[in-house]
Length: 630
Ligand code: WTA
Image (tube, rainbow, N blue to C red; front, top):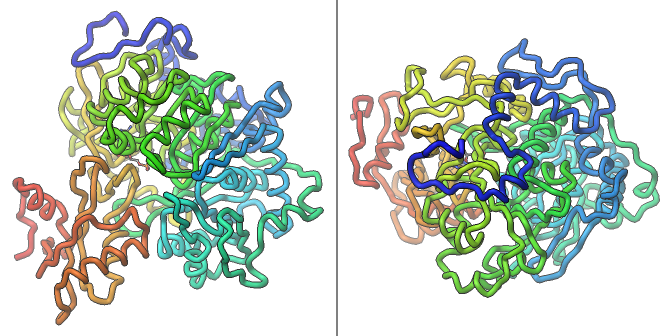
């Protein structure tokens, strides 16, 4: 690959980067893995701990409900903790944490396992069993990692709800998952202020009948309401003798669920993407190892929130499966000053730094001087995720942060894929703005409406043609939706919902979503959620939301609102509506702009034509209008 002349702007890896990489020859590995992907994943699975090995690597009898490592017995938490505690890594740091106000906590692998065992005993004492759902709602504090691993240890299914979501979003997720337990922090710090998580949860719990117990983590210490018989302080339970008893991890089937994670789709309510212990473990372990090239001496920082899939796969599970040291920071990147992240890299000696384009664009604006005050020479690899990275941000990341010596891993993947799907490795030539090629063993294509592969440099729908171990298994409570949403447009292929093109070197360039998903600051939101929040306001009859290009956020939300008869169109109402969306869904969903309309463009069958609104806003041709209602 390296010898071939490539098109466009190319950054070739240094010989040193190649020599140090786990995978030195991408082409060779790719050929092997693609010819026999079952064999490739089986070999990777053999590197992990199984109480019992599988009977069958891949069961595709009931497509698209694929099963991986069927018959195998394992537990992902065992592989994250016990495996390492049994080796020289016992006293190695597993988790290094810094709070927004500067305090820090560290956990060795041994200490983290101890915390997880105590927490697991508490869960068991509350009657939490294999298959029960446990919702977790807190900020970026070590307890969130402990809580996730404890659920896995007892075989419960965790459902982490992003701490930036609000009442309605939390209520919907508690209710849909029928969670038995909610683990919530009293509050979370953000930019010196306290977000009253427990108070939000109390409101959400009013309509969540399934929740029997609420475990409250003390973080901020502000007074909270404790409902007798339902709410308990976690620290009090952890000090009971029962918490300190010996604990045996559940031996689980490879296909037993590990977690559900709600994410926005094309229509309707967010859907619960379900991942399992076995396949997800093999996928995140392998991609973490090859792409971030994890070595024992590394300190890895993924800035994502555990409430999103990146936090699950590459803040918690992927790094711990590899025995790495993870770093976690509680607060905002520019608090109290725009150098906070760079100072953390310097002080904690971070080697691998994985973040989102929106954050980079936000920090770029403050100028290079904030960065240059710090010694960032510990860095050796960088990563980007969540949305296409514009070449300008890529180059700033490469030059100003990486000092032109750190390759950037631009990783494309989704909540549904569980693991990286299109990504470079440190030994691969890079092009700013492209995630390069599919991970070895993953077969992807770009198709036109009719399902033919498009020519190089033409845009089309990105699909995945073969199964992979960390793939979504089902949508909890709604398996039909899995089939409809992903496997129907092109039977036999997984439809990603993204459009893309492939260049003459086979490099893939993501263009963006082709459905009603909007990526705001890398966060995934659905037009439906924003619209239903607006319509729940007493003044609103109908609403439509679209994503509009935004310099820092990638996209921002514009909303168009038809008011009920007789309601007056005022500036104050616009403010109220924005506040209302923030209260219902969360501050990230707050529309940037709201416009009152007398009617909304609709098809004759009554579907809102969002593309017409978008074209009008952008001042471009709206395209075919033949289905537009009079
Ligand atoms: C987008 C986040 C371009 C894409 C891991 C995808 C990206 C959606 C990239 C999934 C990238 C993610 N380049 N676009 N490197 N990574 N996306 O489920 O549109 O929150 O479909 O998972 O993010 O978002 P999700």
